[in-house]
Image (cartoon, rainbow over all chains, first blue to last red; front, side, top):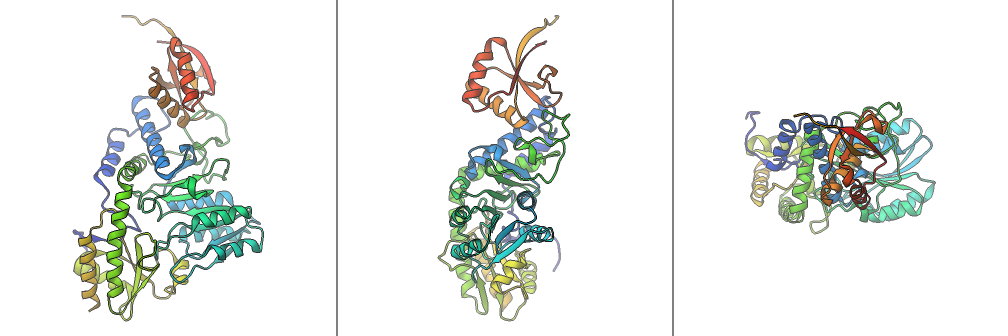
Length: 386
Length: 80
């Protein structure tokens, strides 16, 4: 057994997609090699080329996500920063939020920090599959004036898809905002933000959206302004003004952007626009083969929605006698199957499904996963579990 | 060969993003335009603006409005 990298069956797409499509890698390289100037600053040819890369990537992502005006979509360093901007920018001491019990630390930790400042945080439990019941959310929202409902689009632990459109209606009928962590939604679901009626939606750029690590997105609906987390240079007019520009997207994008990352995300968005429906269908087919196989393994408990229920291609398992960390280690070292054990930065979710004390092994499928991959993984798992 | 100074019309926009949207709208409408550093005549010292020949100024303004990217300021400059 060695630590040397090797060809593997990669089943950790919920963490980050891999391998990145060649078009994404080419776009990243081109951004560094040919469009390496600072975007949005100078007006010489290479600076304009870089600016156009960012502009086009924003438009591609807006079109893909059903955002009519691309100015409402901001680039961030990732979904975590997007969640922080969404929560810290919109919530103030004295506000009350209702939040699902399935949230990732990217949401629960900013909320904890806000709680220290006087934001009241009320958690609504999901069921054992990790799915929220909109009626439970409605009951909680009606208990007291609520500034915002915070809910993920899909779980990074069980794959459960939350009833976001229903929760949006409930929030809005009660004068609250709906703020969504869409880390597991982008690319794996056909996300149409106009239809979902969300007020804010945070996205990872490097998971289902297929971009490189270090880039994410935040959508804020028109008319809803957050306090920006960072002030600084934006390159445009009014540089002499001490105040951060109010216009979008610059208000929320101080400092030099991650042009290579944004370029790669734009390339990922173009691929999804062209192939997304077909890729999602194949992801679902392969994932169901995986999950069906897991359900047949003796001593294995599979978490998440029923086999035929809607889900993103993520699930997790525990075993009667073998610990999750041992399973993940043996799968990797014996068979080159890459999965992740532990709490997946989502202790709330693991508490909800009853695995906070043990953790679990997460298996997640993506655009590159084949039926052969999941059959190799299932055979390896059967052998590891003996 | 000595270049003679010429007059151009320059349009400014609220942000770099808006300027690029304007550049795109003009391109789609077939109006010749050049993206330049914002000239001081527009009251800004940073950012980018769009320069057109005076004879294309009206067509540019129409294309910008049609494309949802109207200018926030307009000036005439002398340039080479």
